[in-house]
Length: 121
Image (cartoon, rainbow, N blue to C red; front, side, top):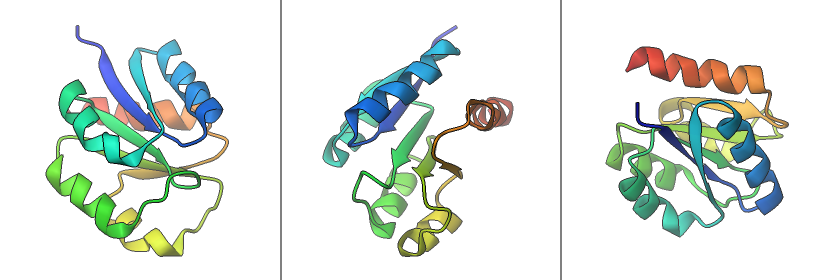
């Protein structure tokens, strides 16, 4: 069975590595990233299942999220934030993001969402 690849986009390198380690303790191969401009190329090269974007550390807007989800419809996009409400990304979160997780990330919630993706495929 091929490993399921997941990109973690977080400008905070320590946080990024912690989430990657959590994913790798399960059956996932995590790819850490710090820069948004590299995301599209990485998605194409890795044939990833999902992308987790820390919207507290990565400057991203509704249009960018929409464009990514339309260009890569086979990829599930998640947001991670310590803020329960992100009005500047309301449209993207409503229509283009699979789920938004609170920080610190709860492993049970994280793997619940990943299992639901597995069941959808």
